[in-house]
Image (cartoon, rainbow, N blue to C red; front, side, top):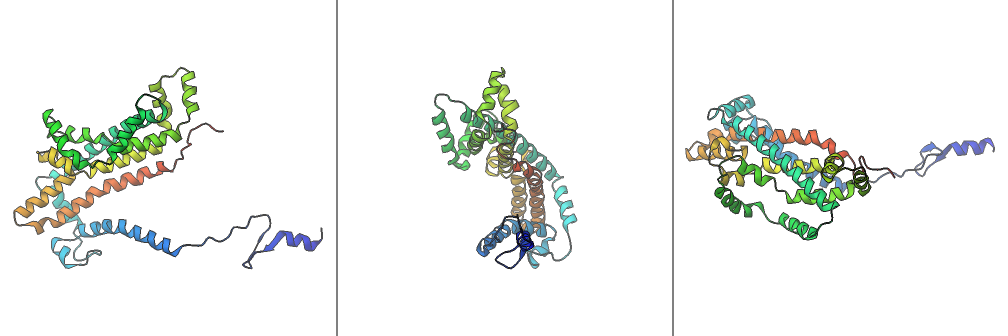
Length: 309
């Protein structure tokens, strides 16, 4: 091979005139879609702007809320004063509402995730009479709005003497048809049948297989169902409204609405606008933290921990 051939093999001019080393595959430049970029930025603004407005508004006084631009700071920075008012109004009942919401959301989300995982695993890995019919009923339950079931649920709990108790919020939140559907689909792909057969050959029972084999492979799916259930219970308003009578048991959604309604009834609604907005902002912060902390578990693949081929 001549020197000219050697130099030609080492460097090659591509179509754009740039020189690159030989032996590396040519990767064409990716074209960016301007329309897709614009749509994505619009989606970002759609989700971020309400949070930004909530934060900016929580730093304003009652007068500044109506005299300044809503998406930027104006007047005195009153965040600390608003927080102080929020946690001292009505003898600091807001903190009690925060604790109630945390308990309702965590207990409900944990129970809903566990039940959905067990039901989804059973639908995916067991063949029993009526499996298709039961799963069809579960899919149909997804289409029923929760508000349509609120009154029958209230009558059922009233007959059992469970209204105006935390269980009136927690027990209905255990039922998650969408979680069952999601875990059924996820279990079918994430858990290899050979793992279950190997565990059975080793003498493990079905309950032990689920806890020690199944749950370890369902991590991302469990986190997804947990977050959906957590947000659903945290933001639930109608069910606590009809189930609870004592303000000490209210979650944040009903409690903040009660503060606003009481102010409106007394003719002083504007005096508590900043307090309600600040309370709404504080109520959103735990959800943001939960998403930021748990999103890393979604990065695991479906085949995490499965048998290598």
